[in-house]
Length: 363
Image (cartoon, rainbow, N blue to C red; front, side, top):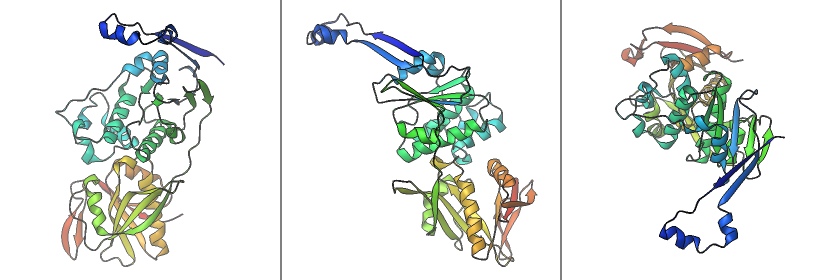
C-alpha cells in the first residue's frame, strides 16, 4: 500500500526567552523538533468513495495530514453575518435544495432557521457549518476539521449519522466528505468508506455498518411539553385533553435519553379515532428518521388499542416521508390550510398554511 511521508521542522526563534528554554534541551531533544509523519495514503478523489475519516488523539497529526491531502478544502470556512437569519445566509442556494439540506443535517425546525447564527447552540452551529460546507465549499471534497469534537456523545453520534444519510441520498450532489475527528466513536454512525488512524498510520478500507436505533415509548406528563414547545413550529399551549407520549432512545451500554414528544387528541365527532396534536423531535436528534419511526410506532400502538390515528402536517420533508410510506394513506391536501373546530367552535387550525392530512392504515 502506498504511503505518505511528511516532514516538519520547527526553527528555534532567536529570542532571549526561546534561547533560555532551548538551553534546557540536549542535542537529541532539539533534533526532535523535526517531526516526521508517515501514514498509508487514503484513496484518491477519483476513486469510488463518499465519506472518509481521519481519526486520532490530539497531537497525532490529523490536521497536518488533512492539509497535505486536501489543502484548499481544509482551509475553507463559512462566514456568518449577525444581521440576518440562517436561511438568508445561503444566498446562492436554491430554496428547495436548501430546505432539504437543512432538514437532512438535522436543522429542519423553522423556528431555528429564522434565528441568527450567534444565537444558536454549539450543536446547532455545527450543523449549520456542516450544511454550508457541504453546499458551498469549492471542489469535490469537503473537509470538516474537529468533526463533532465539541458536542456531547449522543449529539455527536446523531450528527454523524444524519450526515451519512444525507450524503447517501444525494442531498449534496456528488460531494465527498472527509471528517477529521479525535473521537473514534463517530466511526460507526458515520459509516466511512475508509478510515485513517493517525495513531498507527494505518488505513482501513470498507464501509462500517452502524447498528439500528432502538427506542421505547412511554406515557408522559403534559408538563414535559415545556421542554419541547420551543422547537415546535406552532405556538400555543398544549390542549388540556391531550394524552402525551415520549420516545426514549436506548443505547447498548444502558444509557437512555428522551428524544421526541407527541400529544394526541380525540377526533371530535369521529368515534374511535385520534389525531396528532403535537409532534416534536429534539433538534439535536433530527434527521435520523426518529420522527417518522415514532409516528409509525404510535399508529401501530393506537391500532392495537382499537383506535385509528390521523395527522395533519405542513412540513414539506415530513409530507414527502408520509406520502412514500406504505403504512400511511393521504386523505386530503389543503393548499390554503383548514380551520380546526372544537366543541362546535373554531379553534385556530392550519388556515393560511398549506397542509396535508394522512391516516394510519398499517402494514
